[in-house]
Image (tube, rainbow, N blue to C red; front, side, top):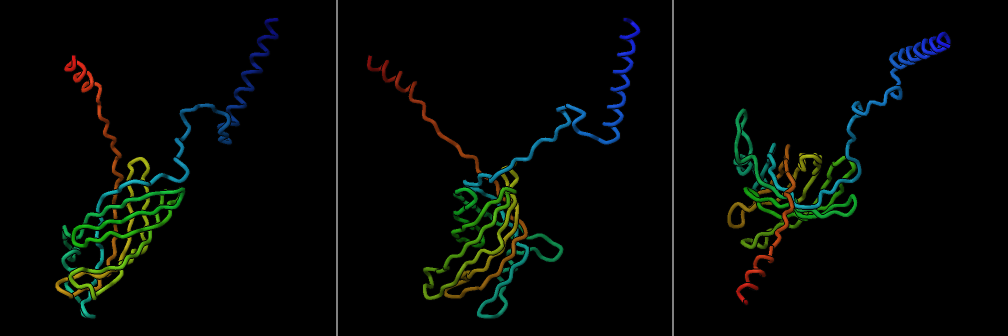
Length: 218
């Protein structure tokens, strides 16, 4: 009996050694059930980007012409060679609604250029947002002059953990300089960085007020 049991144990040990050797040589994942070695899964599916996003954009290039001649407007909002112009970074806000992968909303510029632009686009499962938009440009000070704002090549990538989108875009437009003098402007943005504003809910507690009124009534 002891001899048989010893033989069985030696045989089991040899089988275990053989399996361990095969697993180590071939790298078979199924040989181990160590859950600590599993990689975290990346979120999948269409992300929800509906809401208000706020941040800044940086002007990389800008050209402007006035009546066909080079203007001086862009020099005030671009970085000089080898230097930094703080005015090259401007505020922007994006308000979005969403249905499945379709998005729409308003892109709001403020600062050196103020304009609200309706936009539409798509959001992919990778978190990349594409937008386009156009709107007529007029100015009450000179209603006879009209132009068009056109948003081009907007794309931004979503960081789901940080609720942040970073990307780039460009646009062309008209901007009034004075009286009825307008500049035709072409702007290239190398970085737009926006974060989603947290939604806050305000709750009003009326319990203490009711109790106070009840005691007063007594």
